Length: 557
Image 1 (tube, rainbow, N blue to C red):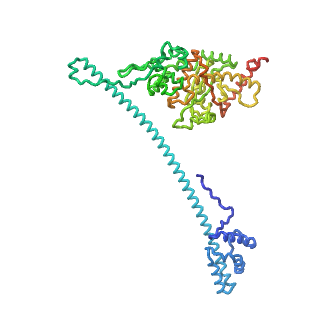
Image 2: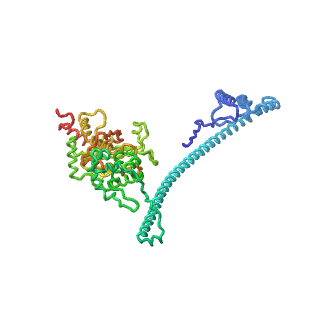
Image 3: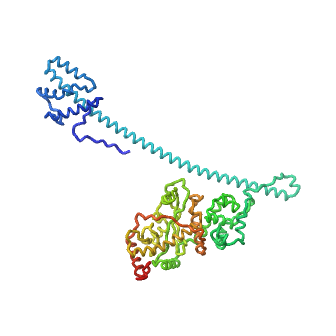
């Protein structure tokens, strides 16, 4: 609450208030006092002078009406004056009464001034109490919210501990059952005498096993299945799928136990890739592969983590010097712009509203377009001319603009250390122009040279946008809100980028029916020009494009 400011009157005399309940009498007194001050030359806003005997008559005349007005709401003064007049025979008595009336008026004014000061002090005290009350309420609400979040975290921790405890008890029960079965087998092998002396247990029930139909997977996993049918389910050829299984075998292989047989490597990888490719709910994936829902979810996370650990270092890395030179030459062939090391783009992946810090993930642009509240996380990527990702930054909240995501990426840190010297990363108008980021002109009334440059750099931008469109088209789980938890989602998205690279490197064509159109809006950065040197460098490139006949529509020059 803002502090209370008390304004003092500008006149040197204190404000005049009458102690009366009659507002009309108050106004009459003020008017009469004003008129008298105009007609009487000695009435000034100064201290009252000492009056002699001759002036009493004039002063008494001035306050004749006032003597009749009872300050305490009665006619006590009027009766007293009449009594004094009768006793003193006129003028003498009136002159004696006038100083008493004057002193009463002065006392009344002083009392009223004191009452006004007390009212102001009371108002300040009330305002201070109200401010303290509001602050106390705010502190109470803050404590309540903190206690709520603490209780929520404790609840999740207790739930995790309960799940771990149940799993531990289940494993102990399984071990006990296995030990009992082993003992029974040893007893039966010892002979009929040992069998007769020992207690024979009843039939043993195998744990963790439920009969489910696996017809769909057995047909699709058969070597004789057609290439078209396999590609429709997994968005890749059988040869690429076999290569991925061979690479991941050491990371996802599990041994058989006494309770059940382990799920084969091919089926484990198939569950993950099918889930990423189709985006079907886990209950549908469970029916197709003949596995439990929780088992399918666990397999998806395990295989994605294996892809990130084993395959990402091989198939998603920043190019070395030899490959970098090839990328520059290929981009220069496409656009005529030299020293372009990659094309950059940022897209959004829809998510379910998180329980914590939900406002940070709110996507305003998607909400306005779809007329439905949307939440998302960002994926920023740099691709080479073939659409292969060379750098990705995954997981920042969807409310952040592209320039802020870039500033928090490892690519920006690499450039800050000087590792991107003498190269350009081409981006759209959502990124700022920097010493290593090349973006189109965005101001109004472009010149012919600037317009031609925008067309050429647009061809480089299109490479990254097409790569992201294929990424979302091939892996349909990125098109809708997923069931994966927010903390596990970056691993899943990273696995999708790695699988995209493998398909692009092996020239896996995407069927047109799986095409996807991006709708990520471009928002201009707050500070679009970060370097004066980059402005001159961009103008120089645009000038060379025009005068060397490399710009669009300049072949006749």
